[in-house]
Length: 305
Length: 300
Image 1: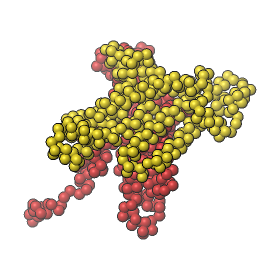
Image 2: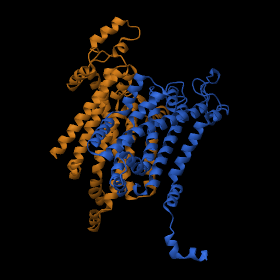
Image 3: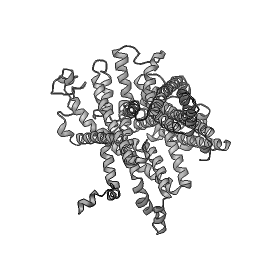
């Protein structure tokens, strides 16, 4: 087990390192970062001065090593736009995105798991078909459009919820639904498949034979076993969702890290964008690592692969 | 004499339907596949014949005819789906928007398909170090937040059809690589591959004529699913203002432009979104259907 964890940890660190390099090299994709920073009206000397000031005149790998060294200690440099440390800017916004992510995945689990269980109890029934249709339709729905439709219905027509902002818990209701529905189809299908698999197993027949009630069979025996892969899927989905929050946050003007990313991209604020790409990647890396370790802990067969 | 033979129950048992007949029967018996493929085919025809079908020039602005409602909300048949804030005919823009969506979806899926298939087949066929490197690359790719990276790159390079296609093509190869790797691993050990190797077939020949034909089914399924994915992402990028640039008629861009007037004219947002939803749904139905029909044993 320890061997597995160490091996998996090494992979996670290597992946994080590679992502950090890609995210750093974005700065050089645009050509000359000093000229971009100085603006169109700057003279040649100004550009040179900025180049030296920001250290753009040194080799790329040296700059990368310095940036990474600082990033590891939590220093992501200074935002071009706000002239403030990027780390504090992001820290300020990250809690909103985290809350949204936790609410989103909870919403997805609380709706998709019961749906999956019901679908598995009565395969090919009307409910099963409806759930399947919902999951196919859910995958086809553009999240930004779904968000706007919710705003039109619940904020404008009915006036139940605020359309945008971050001031109260009500601001999180619609973003939670939009972000959560994205993870629902996968969770539902996995719950359904897992339940179908478990329900046809020997120990379920044994439990039924000894006279356990149907509820006890379903929840105590079947769901507890079927839910294990769902939990690890949920961890991976959570990593994906945080990365996808940029669309949802900009639709609802929810001032989280995703919204900051969108604003920063619009302002050419590269240090902030680089840091955010790295942070969102780190979330994914950490969540998949936890999910793999959880899987290996629960199922020793996974450790060998 | 022939009648007698055909009616012989023993004989009928032996003359069962051929695999091809079974495939055709499954294809036409699969509602999702038929519905999905019909809608996609219709959209493709609309995109190809856009200049003939569109009642107006999708770029022609007219201050006289701004924000006309669609015909079902009291508008006139001159503009069946109304006009936008610049007086452009909404139906014409929708029709031309199908070109943008389908083109981006298809080309991006093809680019990522080439990258992902090459990586996946190489990993599955050669195994060992090659496999380790490809698996690592897949992990790196999955760790990068697609929307954020795509937005950042498009912002740096400038939004245009070509840039969006290339960025999406370079970002969406992960599923191809994962599935092609697994499929190749399954096929690699089969007897006919060993037989071909034993009679001296070269590695490229083995991959092209033994492996590829047998993983083509899975490949087509992933192409359709990734095409849907690319279309949704293009719409999201354009919606966020960092995809296809105005005045190009892109459905995502139309939703974004309609957002300003959403309070009074919700149909400006509703219509392009519904069309986008149906196109992506149809492509997904087609992909799921193809998987069911070509590999009935994998049906979920």
